[in-house]
Image 1 (cartoon, rainbow, N blue to C red):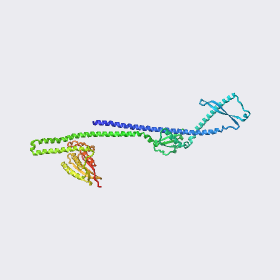
Image 2 (image 1 turned 30 degrees about the vertical axis):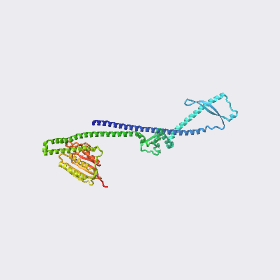
Image 3 (image 1 turned 90 degrees about the vertical axis):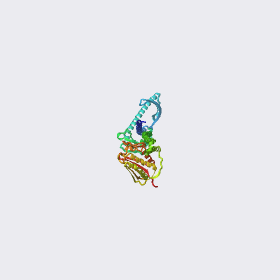
Image 4 (image 1 turned 180 degrees about the vertical axis):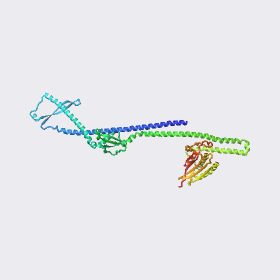
Length: 519
């Protein structure tokens, strides 16, 4: 797959993922806003109903008090006289209501006659006289209902006047039973499907707290709702009810119970996609480096094979065999090229180490300073060939480590070989190996004064097949496996390695290994 195709695919997927996240966040905010508005509307409607219930309860109370007073007053005028004899009659009549309708009623009529008249033998009415009496009774009933209607209307007017002028002058604690108020609030909230905890305060028109239930707090202003009690009171005497909902945030955020898992899974998909794309680019780069490695390896192996083939053909010539010096030279060439070919094959075989999770190491206890001295003595001839210097500064005192001697020796050889490969032209190489102790570790530094490495390349030099560009220097050979091999061996030995470099000044490799502590 082409790199441009990978980038296009990555761009499309990134846009799709971030658009999905944006839509989820926007929908989540909209849902929470709707949830909060729904909560606000239900609370406001409930508190308005509470205020209405309190007004109705107050009106009913005043009406009952006035009805009781009117009955007491009316009873004083309806007591029967001692000198009067009451005669009870039953009559039916149809009356006209104040609204224009007609109602048929059955009324018991009490007639009062004096004892003197009865004593004289009474009065016997004729049929004609009886009809007139029924008509008069119907008229009297209509008049009685009219007077009762006017009385009740006056009574209601009186109650209204009391509500207007008396109720607002009474203290709010006398007008409201706070226990009943709590019941009203709870009932209205449950009717609105809000089964949430709350606490409330009653504040009078002087802004004085008259009553406060336990748990009321003023820290969260958005969770406090205010409702005017008895809104028809004069504006200067309005009392208010404040209700605090401590779990409002939980009620609103309960909508997140669906969105949080959705966003988590979306984020997991995004991370997985990023990892896949990064791994795809890594594999692409690794494939390119492998191709470069194969081309380079083919050239490196082809050269000694061609030289050996040519030398072997020369040995077939009888004239060569007759000249010992020429024969010796040709044999030397074959030997040198064979060694070169073996070295290249060994480099290729090192690749097998990277296909295993851990290299097969022969661990034993050795003195690291002794290994460094041996490596320096072996490598000094190569350095002197370029008129350079190789010094060691062994400051470490605790130097016993558990390592594979052969592989760690190869690690030091690789670092020193690279220092000579990437030396500066016309500048004698100066190499230095230092050791020191830091806690329970030993630090090994291999320094040179070579061409250095760019900062962007320092992080990649330990990757397989990666080779730093050397500009106009074309005689540096290799497969890009040396430093990858170094890092793997050091890591498998339980240590770490890093590089510090400055362009045109040199490079420093720092290896850290655990030392053997005395028990």
